[in-house]
Amino acid sequence: MQPHRISAFSINQQGGNPAGVVIQEALPNTESMQALATELGYSETVFAAPIPQADTWRVRYFSPENEVPFCGHATIALGVALAERLGAGSYPLVLNEGQIEVSGREDNGILSAALSSPATRSKTLSARQITDTLALFGYTTNELDSRIKPAHIFAGADHQVFALQDRTSLSKMDYDLEAGREFMLDNGLVTVMFVVQDSATRFYARNAFASGGVLEDPATGAAAAAFMGYLRDTDQTDASQIEILQGQDMGQSSRIQVDATTVKGSPVVVSGAAHHLD
Image 1: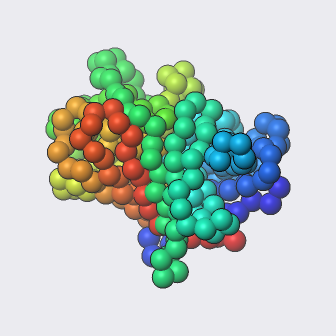
Image 2: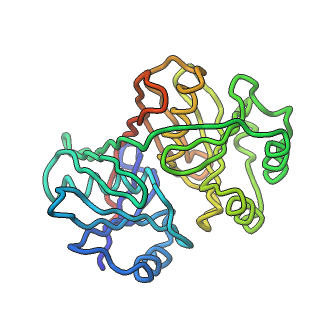
């Protein structure tokens, strides 16, 4: 298996979140996919193989430690790779659970892709859940932004989201990786997302990804999709588009754009630029 190395949600062909992309006529066995993802060490590596009779692609995602149900940045990287291989256009994808679509293209040397997410949903967190998560990261309730309530959010993968009052609080996000892994696996979470609202349509974010053995993700498209769905579905925004800036505190600045219709629970569109690392 010879993977492509593509960084998704990059800015001016720098930064972003690297992903491994493997496209073959048939998917390797699970053990081989996990081994390659562990060797690469990226937040996720995506594997894709055509289903000719259905004119679609079977896709699976692996972190360095386990399989994940859906990954936004790896899907953007896959969209770019498919467009380069087969031409600009849209490609239906079959995940372990459900189906989505990704499109890729190149404009004046800039690679980009957009994905239509799984359906969105969310639920409020109990006082105990809020206290337990904040304690893991060393935050207090006094640092929370009351405009956006903590929640369990979903758009193909499960996350928690907490809004903080300012970027100073965001910049000090820290936690123990082993404790975080245990917490996220026990609670069925892929990441824990912290955001700061900069304007009506712009947010800064950080995502802890201990469930996959990664301390922090520089760009998390699945969480971005879930977050936009949460804002829309709970009437916390009337914006049809938001921008999420992530990775600044890691030195890997990333930009994620999310567009949504007004239909609650419907898929959202996550898009961004990408560039090759190989």
